[in-house]
Length: 166
Length: 134
Image (tube, rainbow over all chains, first blue to last red; front, side):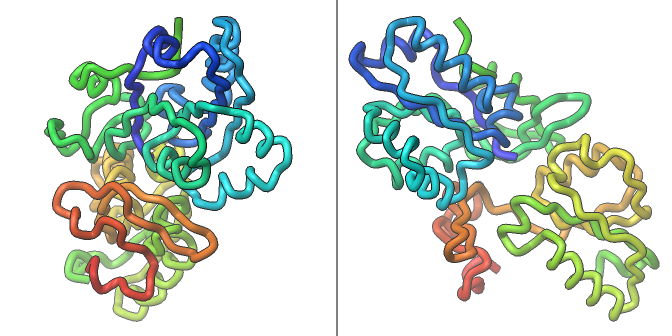
């Protein structure tokens, strides 16, 4: 599975978004969810609520099983309600891996993408160690064969793990 | 075949997610490999299709033979090693990096390669021109 951490804490995200931003949150419900809940239905719902409570206009929160398929966003755009949300939005917050972000950049080019994720590589979900990074795309990480728990990777890189929290 | 020279019986364990989209896993690739192994003196006594080998929980409750032929990514390999530490696991795949899949062309594209595979950035799998990544 693709391992993704979070670049920003919630306060930095809020500070970054203009007050008149109309925000669409898109999340992947597979790898991103399994990365300690960085993405997925619950993370999307919570982030949308937090942004609304803080006075930002949230036009929608969309969750897809995967975001690394080129067809996923195209198919959603065929749906009138999603197209309307996407056309109304000014900013897109992807709770996905970097591949998902690339797909969105291609399919939703009019939106400003607020990259909140940092994809660090591939890994697996261990029953004893949780999410573990085994192959890095980050040059500064030197991994042992058995990998490093994602929580330790976050510490090493100064990143955040899991969903946005206040 | 060299790595299987001493194995009489094997289980093939194939991941049915990312590797399926790369053409190096899934049911069809597993059946294809089983056919060739059986024809070359290796008895395939079990074929296990796992939705995601990288979710260790999905490996529990399976009892493969001592020798496992694994059609998964490198993370799936670590997951399998942790699950069956005494098994001899023979991986069939090399993991090049992270990419996307386009159902319209039935091909996966390498977007973010790991170190050593940078020249394969943008390569498509399975594509008509796979020579570049062998």
